[in-house]
Image (cartoon, rainbow, N blue to C red; front, side):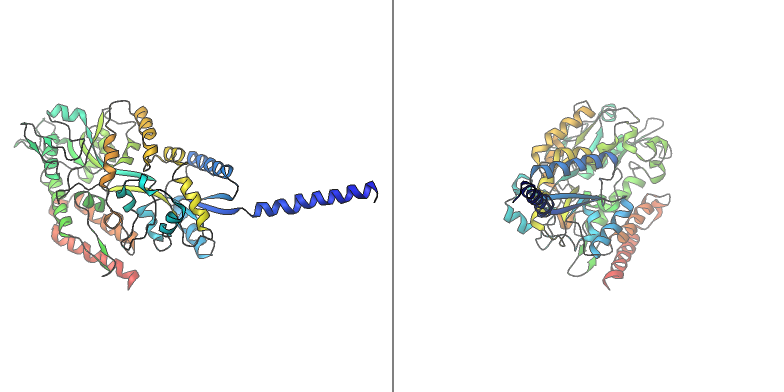
Length: 464
């Protein structure tokens, strides 16, 4: 064989390796797709961080190729995901997505229990109450905690000081000390009394005074900042709303009691603002607590997003939520996570990626999502960042302690029922009626009966 022929054969062999073997090796990687868009994740700075997480994961191992698919917008994400599922090309992982946002695909989510067991993923690092948020009534585990936003009570220190009131309890099971020194349980009835003292008219009279002018209020005692009806009901008492066995939605007696309590604070005490007041400049055109003219707000932890430029330029702090109507603590918690689809062709590889997103990627993702980590190893770093943002002595431990009182999945305020979105729109219409200009005149019992009947009719549209 001539030297020229030898070199030619060698060159062919090398090309075969380059053009043949190397692509086969690349093809041997399992491709896992991550779909973003049902919740947060579509903003420019979030996209940059998510892309870096993908790059970091791919560089950390050689068996899986993670590919990200970010929907053009939240408005188109559901159509895009539905199209992918219908075409038989579903993504493997979807998220971050909240409980409500996931309900449209409730039949599509994979039960993670066997994957947790086979991989040895340690669920014990999470508070059991948080894990239970993702358990269904039949015991399936449809998610693992990632981002948590427990409901807490924000309070305006200056308004409490001005009224001569002690601050609300910052530990569970601690009593509240009334102005006369007596100790009482921290309940929603106690909150009602405090809210009246914090509600003040233009002449300086509070809502406990016979001289109080309800037509000229300049400071309110309480609201449920940006909360919708079902969250407010659940704050006062978590209950199962829809029974999957009977196919019936029920407004339980406790929610009827809660609605009367809520209405009384709006129209009898005048300590919760109406829709008209809430949209006024007095209450920062819809961001009432930030105005500095509201004493207390029960709202999930994500509300820290919106207090950087508080109109009132005041110091606020955190307290525990009151005991619910049954005399126990229950914390309504908004929560986002990543979910696996049943249609994944490679569930084990997808779970490997999911595990990475729920652990090593948490510092990057939670920061850009504005999320409070469920994983305790990453909570202090998040608290440190919040402390830099709000540099006064806020008791962030309240948020950590609240996780143990989280409501389980079946009594979550966004727990699924058929035709969920349309049903919630109808429930929201009730809230608009209650807080609107004629809210004082409505027959609550009759309206709740009508609401219950309407929601069941909406459910029947899809269940027959």
